[in-house]
Structure formats: C-alpha cells, structure tokens
Length: 119
Picture 1 (cartoon, rainbow, N blue to C red):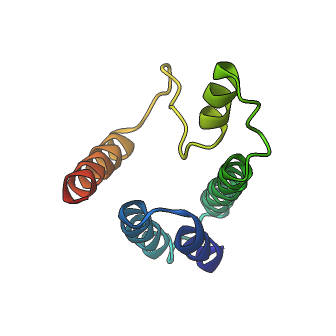
Picture 2: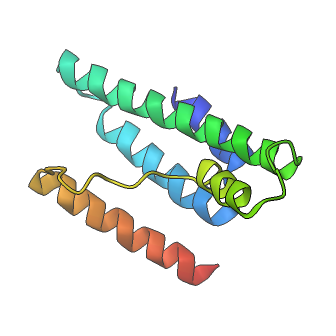
C-alpha cells in the first residue's frame, strides 16, 4: 500500500503536491509502524486505501477530460469535469476531530501553504 501510494504520487501529482504528499505518507506510515491495536491498524489501512483509490480515480478523470472524452463543449460540462478531476475532498462541517487530529491538520495546512508559496 505504501509503495502504491508513492507510485501514484509520482505518476499523478504535480511536483509541489508530490513532495508534500510523499513526506506526509512517509511520516504517517513511520508513526504507525509499531502500532499493535488491530482495530486502529484496520482503520489506518482502510483510510489509506480509500485515499489511493480516490487519487487514482481522480487521475483517470483528469486524463479523460484532457483527452476530450468528457468535454461536451457546454459551460455546465466544464464545471462538472473540473469538479470530477480535482484532487481532495472537502471535510464535512460537523466532523468532530480530536486534539491530536487538529494539531496534525494545522501542520498539514502549514506545509501546504509553504509549498504553495514555493511554487
């Protein structure tokens, strides 16, 4: 799973997103390497598998749009195509995060802002 994610980053992400994504994946897998709680491990791998599937499906959609297969030439089609081919998801407004998750999210936001400034 780890290698598949890194290969997907190399194949599908722009350089500034790739470096941030690779660093984040490496950090998360390193932190969970010694985990022994089976329920946490299952959730960890399930969420990373979902991420990989989302990354690959988004990349396929981008390739399809760039090939012109989905473009119907209308204004609505382009808006729908861009929504399908964007990386990431919005978080639900009512999502409850732990203190640790909030700290991690803040770190991720900082790194993303740094990467945006550097590019």
